Amino acid sequence: MDIGIIGAGSLGLLYSYYLCKNHTITLYTNRKAQADQINTNGLLMIKDGIHTRVMINADSTRNYKEELLIVTVKQYDIASVIAEINNLSPRTILFLQNGMGHLPYLSALLKHHIILGIVEHGALRLDDHTVQHTGVGTTKIAYYNRDNSQNTLIEQLETNRQSLFSIEMKDDWREMLAEKLVVNATINPLTSILRVRNGELIENDHFIKLLKALFIEVIQVLGLSNKELLWEHVQNICKTTAQNQSSMYKDIQNGHQTEIDSILGYLIQQATNTQKPIPHITFLYHAIKGIEVGND
Image (tube, rainbow, N blue to C red; front, side):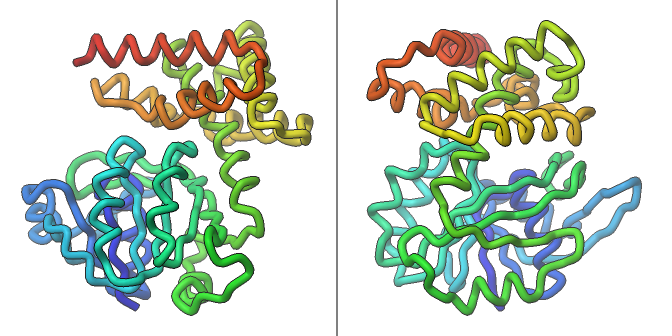
């Protein structure tokens, strides 16, 4: 199967590596220099100290010709990609973004077969053609605009999945995204402001109190009822990724724009309908936006 992967950050490189074993991959980069690097040197994967190189096709144009497109760009780049996709003939498109800020854009794409997904892998891009797989997880996906429909392209993905790269189909995309948003809205902002690795949020008695208070605000805004299970899930993510730095923390360290608008910004928008106080969410949102201004 021919698959186009849009976005050559850590996730784009990671998915290109694992999916190229059973499919023909074109990785669409934003810069020609990166495409040239990948086409010349191949894609290098590092996992558990083992280096593996594969050759894939990289393309810096936006000539998306594949039947299945996987969008891995960050939230702040999604609008321009969707504008391009909107001009294409009907395709199957899998969106893999943090947060829920991309949802308002999807109504323009209903001629396509839209799949939403969340990523539970840890990945770190070391340079333009090298990615480190820092934590094995799964990819959870759900149909957006054709409930309970069958899609042969998605079935091929599920059938040909790698042992370290599982794909799990979920019934309810809202529930799936909300669960991931709880994790992103608690761990990412706090680790960024406190400048700590994920595990320290539950190892430090003071930090875990902040984490719990922020967690309560987040689930109240989202109207989630399974509080105990979600709190256990957040703590478990901190534990299993204890030595990792969150993606937002790494963005701040590198002076890059963060996805705070699609994570806490989205929650602030939703909170206007609930009339519930959200002091922790509001503080963290403006603190990180202020850091971004300083980085600029």
